[in-house]
Length: 393
Image (tube, rainbow, N blue to C red; front, side):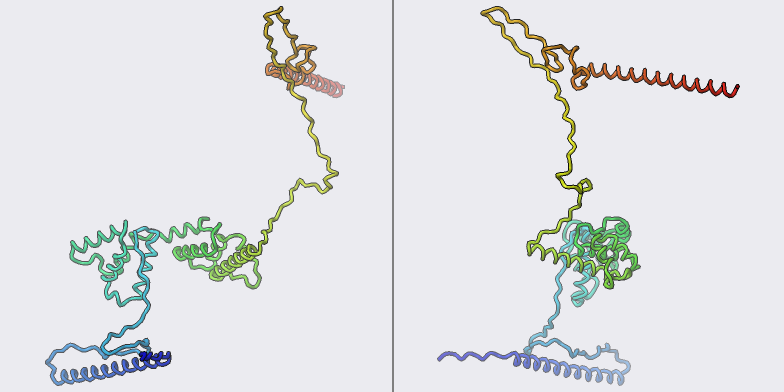
């Protein structure tokens, strides 16, 4: 015969079983409280009848809250209450840029699990257990050596340890540094996302101590991307108030998300991005066929010297005559350089001839200026003599 398979237990049956176990647990706890209360009353009566006897006062009966979590318990097994187990902090190497983050993660863990830290000593040593590298390890080594040498704890309470920690591992003058950054352009958004810009801006505002919302909004708008800032400022009834930084943060994030969604939509449809072209100022309004281009005069070709001909002597016959001399300016065989009609073409002149021509032109200019000055002097003298004759007559 095949073994009988047990029927599956329904969810309702399980819930009823759990509720029954919880009710039995509550009844047992109530009975224990009543027993403890009767014992306390008996001890109080004994103290009243025997005033000379000394006894330690007992604590009040244990009170059990009515909203205990539902658990399944068997007789003789310990009661386990479910709870949130936070993640422990990461190892810390002592760098100042990570000091604030590390101590905040430690404080968060201790606030969620206060039962694990009955005293400040446990808190301090637990934090020290995560400081294992570089400057943090050296700080732990100094602390433990002091405790071993003095046979007592290095820090009297958590406040003293926290002050020493912030002095060694948190940036000095955080408020001043944040204020200086907010007065420059180093915190501007530039090419970053809006989320990154808002996160850094809120961090700077928190460290600097700014509390005036109008000042915060002005500085936020100053560092925001100009396109996003203009869109928010030009909104109608939905425009956030200048005294509400949170609404400015939310609106900037919303516009940035809308922009990203629009770019993704255009990319999925294969739509090319619109490129705005600016017309040039030199573009003519007349048809191209009617516009006559202005042709620059073609400069005269620079005359090149005639290549030197190499003659080889005829060993069998008489020696060949010398070749005729050519003009080294234009290469013509009809005249030489002094009689060349291109003498006045500066492009056909040598450097010496150009310097000589320049000196001649400057000398001619000086002579012309002197002659013109003499003529002006003679005219002025003539006018002066005429004026003198008229006044004397």
